[in-house]
Length: 339
Ligand code: AMP
Ligand code: TRP
Image 1 (tube, protein in one colour):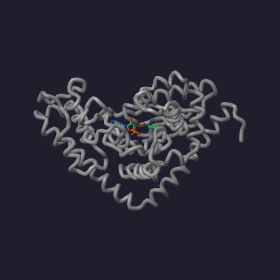
Image 2 (image 1 turned 180 degrees about the horizontal axis):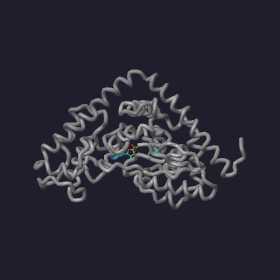
Image 3 (image 1 turned 180 degrees about the vertical axis):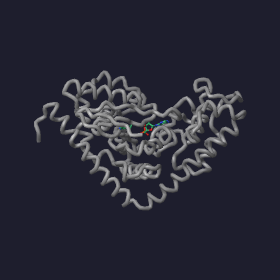
C-alpha cells in the first residue's frame, strides 16, 4: 500500500518510518516482538530510518568496551531480523550529530513539568544513587530523533507511548511558535505482544534492565534455554487456559507470545488448549522457529564486522542528508544566526 502524506512544507512523499533501540543490553523477545520484528514489515515504499540509540544508552553508566560491542551486535540483529540496508537507512545515533543539536532545541521546547511526568524516568531513576540529568531530558532527545526525519510512523512497544505523545506535543508546540517545520508523528504499536511480560514475574515487563535471567528470553538464547525458560514460566494455580491479562497474567503472556509468533489471535488460541504444559511447549517451539533463522544470519554477519561498519557508515551519511536540512530549518525558524 502506498501511503501518500503531505509534508508541512507542501511536498508529497511516501511514508517516513523511524525507530530506535538502545544497545544497553542483549536484545530480548519483548524488544523483538514489540519493535524490531516490525521494522522490516512496512510497505515496500516506506522511506525508513532505524538507528541504534547509543546516546540514549549512556544516560545510565555503560562499560565502554561492552557498549561498543553491543552497538555492533545490535546492528547485526537489525540486519539478521530482515532489515535490508539497500532499502532502509541503518545507522548509529551518535554518528549523526544533528540529533544532539536538535535535542537541545527540544529541551528548550519541553517543560520541566512534562518531563517530570514521564513514567519511564520515574521507573529508571527509582532507587538509583546517581541519576544523570540526561536520564531526565532523554525524551527530548528521543523527540529530536523522530522529528529530524519528519517521521510519520514510529513502530514501538507499548512502553514508549508516553514518549511518543510528548514528541507529538513538542512538534505541535514548535510548529505553532515558529511555523511549520516538523511532521507530527504517529506511534505504531502492535496489537499483539505490545508488552511482553517477564516469564517469572508476569506482571512486570520483560526487560534488559531487570535482573531476571530465567524470566527473560534473549534473541540469541540457544533452543535448550528457550525451552527451559518457557517450561518454568510462572502461570497460576488454576488449570483453565483463558486469555485474561489482568486475572491470568502468566497464561495470557504465553498466549500473546504464541499469537505474535504464529500470527494468531491470543484469545482464540486459548480455546485450543486445555492444559498449561502443551501451551508452554508450543510457545517455546514457535519462538525457537522464529529466532532460529535470525540466529544463523546473526552469526554470519558477526563473522565480518568490517561489512557491518561499512553499512553503518553509509547509513550515517544517508541519514545526515535528511537530518541536516531539517536541523537547518529548525535553527532558522528559532532565529539562530546562520553559520
Ligand atoms: P529498548 O530495548 O528499551 O531500547 O526498547 C526498544 C523497543 O522495544 C521499544 O520500542 C520498546 O517499546 C520495545 N520493547 C522493549 N521491551 C518490550 C517488551 N517487553 N514488550 C514489547 N515491546 C518492548
Ligand atoms: N526510548 C526508546 C526506548 O527506550 C528508544 C528510542 C530512542 C526510540 N529514540 C527513539 C524509539 C526514537 C523510537 C524512536 O525503547
